[in-house]
Length: 435
Image (cartoon, rainbow, N blue to C red; front, side):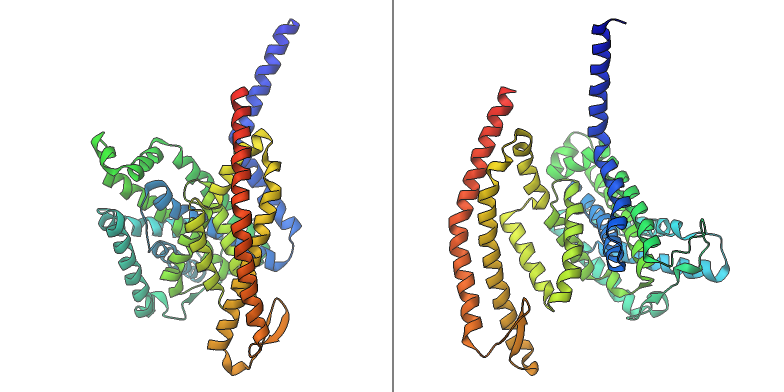
């Protein structure tokens, strides 16, 4: 073979390797992270947090199939999450009592089938309407199931819920899943499997039709597709994956109660999906990770952590409607063109101003909460490990000063950050056109 032929062969092989890396590189990195993270973070709290993140990722991606892919805003997606968890617990108890040879790793599939069945039942009614009507129907179904969970005690266990013991099921490779370490890998396996399956679904013709129904319902029907059927199928598939997430949550906590199917659970997945960004597949993954982390960390710091989540949600909707994934997407061209470093100084200044404003808002909120709700504990409180008295004028003055100074700095630094991004983007476009 001549040198030229060898060069052509090597060039083709390298281009093929690059294409293969682009196609599967993200999944290879995801698999590596799932395997490596438990080796780095070895505490039981870390295993618990990562397990909850895996469950939240599946749940958020299932919700994004409705909202992000098909354009259906649901206020009751926790129904399929909760029902999947309830039936998974009942099956685990039945398997343990009767000695049925079904191992624990197959239980999430039972939850998924439950979510699929109820998705078919409820979806046949709710998907006949879209927009606001669909959202209200989903909310009504959510309240119906949540009420039944409290009324039908023999099935749902009332407020106490239903407990189980995951270690009593058939062992696989001598694993009883008693430790959180083993449960983490079980959740990680199902999380990776569901992620691949849902991503593959978005790349199919059916996934494209879901996008068409989302963008223009009338035109999708005009070209010959049954848009209502597309919404119904997407709804059922979404319920299937939500049921898997609910079953994994039941395995992780070994208890299921009415809160699994309640409005708070539906609101949590809506929050995670919006914060991450509904415009891309990776958005709900980012949102699930961030929201789970903040829930666990903020709940140990303040009693009103839900209020901060509400403020975060409002801020993302107002200033970053495409979520965290949208912010990252905006900077991909800068990274490829090598102009990302131009915006970092302006971003650092803008972030510092935002943190000053956040400190002022947080201090003001905590002071107000302590004065209005926790007066029985006396005037003393602490903020960021600094003790002070609410009866003193100084903490209120500091809160107001931080808020005002942070606001003025934001007015000064954020336009500069925007101009820096515009300049870097213009340079990136020029380099792209030159290339």
